Length: 184
Image (cartoon, rainbow, N blue to C red; front, side, top):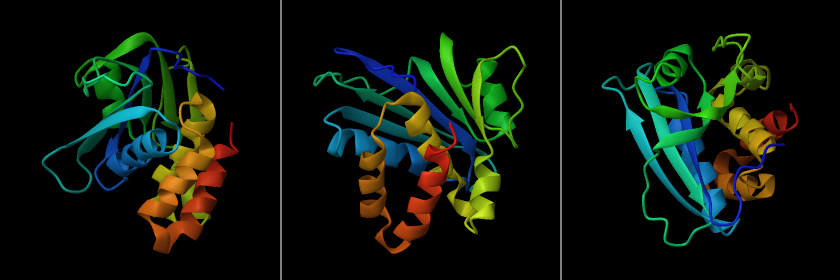
């Protein structure tokens, strides 16, 4: 587990993928969990391409333990969570934003190819969600993996935020979250 935040620190995260993958929803749930249940502060800003589905989509999430950390945008991301090749390439190429030199990379290994030289945490999030019969919940598998790898948001806090956001679909989302959390 990699823990980024220390006293007086903020962590900048980019969740990136295609429209329809639930990218902004994953960032929203992580931010809600950090604020409501982990005693941190968070700001999330979604960004969508002009296409409703399949276009470029990403969300900037800042988690901080500083009460008056009022700047909600990502300057240089500490973490990149990529669920498609296009947005991975755009961020690593500097087109969409900056990454810190030692950023942590988390990818859907079936959809994103990273150079062998890059340190990256890989999970077949989409495939695992499909095997569970919930292909649309690949973002939740990725969210569980994100929680385990980074240690930025408590697993039980994410569960609580998920239950609050999707009470009618909590059972399948909980299973997908558990699948992702247990893969590191």
